[in-house]
Image 1 (cartoon, rainbow over the protein chains, first blue to last red):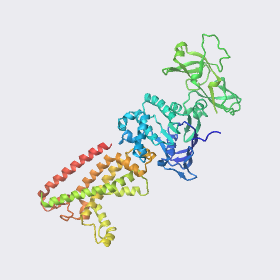
Image 2: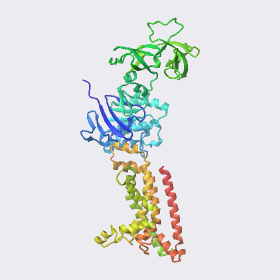
Image 3: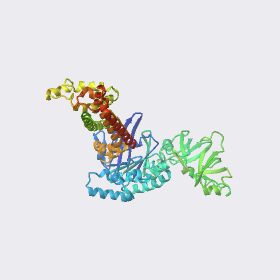
Image 4: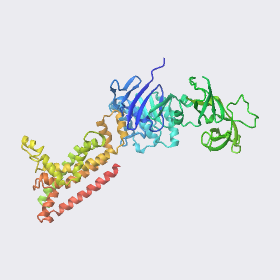
Length: 376
Length: 221
């Protein structure tokens, strides 16, 4: 028997010009709400915290009902025990770090409160800053104070709204991993909102993809990365090389498809239930880092090692520090699939140098069927 | 200074202090409600509070007589019940000054409260605070400088109130003659030399108040 989800969320609500209608669940670990701005992610957090009352729905955290429109249950935010880390942190500027962290503990005895604040500050490495004001802190320190303030009340659920967006890029990367470690340590139900896929992937165990007030996919993070449920999800994740072809033949294991004059073979989606008839339009994507350039100095390509073989010319390239991104146009008449080129290919610097790609622009390459992902 | 001048000055200060206290009690909650709540009749309430700022003070005074005079809507029942009427007492001067100063406090305080980040209030709610406790612990402390600037302006306005005071409280030497009324009387009777010191004092006081309010206002943002 699978354990009951720790978080079970159903929300329906309308604000002028926008309708939110979502249902998702999450188990242990961190759930990330991911999607473009204006998809309803922050509104969902506000509903979870009780700051916005949805028109209908149900919110259950570890078996505790926070909201249920049919049963007439709506706990006010003060009674929900939800720790909320706001975008921009919303630290009380007139209070010191320790007063901020202790703000939610006012009803506890003084000694217990002081002990709890000291524990939280020590745990987050803030002990030396206890008497500072928020204005005297760096961005990273503010983030930790906001987290500490939310954690001090020993919340049943922790919510983080774009916890890294107020930070500069280099700091953002470092704190992303620090936050990941802290959240893994806490082992409490947590929901993080972000519009950055790298952040979603690093922070989340389960990713719920939002688009225009709807959930378009909810899956463990690796499943999402390898099997986006639809073209919409692939677009939101900004996956490169999303293509359109036509089905030639579909079996539960494989799908043959035609694209730009090529006959390609792909592994079918893991559900094995997607069996479109021939000539159906089909969307798929090819991971740029899994395209194999075929060396010319080793004789003709061995067909048993290479499948989905194509030829093309590098028409554009860009250096990303450790990798090169090559844009390749196939040796095929007609309009390329992505404007001036057909395929984006990513190669490590070392490969680029060994193959002398800067000199040699025309290449034969292959793609394993497992690296062509169909989007049902 | 003459005894009359001293008496006017002391009355003026008492009136202005009391009017400022009443402003704080009425105006701060009013500013909060106007800044943070939506309710039926909000526009009307806002209008009523603000009108004395733009109406001729004598018109405001006229309304106060209609409301509080011995035959007024509230004044008549009060007179029947207690035999006392507020008109032509120093309390009338306090009420006139309060009503005239209220829009200055409410508008300044409201702007200060509206500038407080609402996420701070939401954070306080998630940390267990009711709306009232949030207002007392977060919103009002953060709007403090704006509110203080508003109170300073209200005090200055109360100190200089003339028209509405004359209408509701009259100009009874020793009882309702505040500094502005004393100055008016002195000029009318050709004794302006008598009150020159009062004129200068009032100017000086108002100047200090403006500088103070400006500084508080600047720190509020």
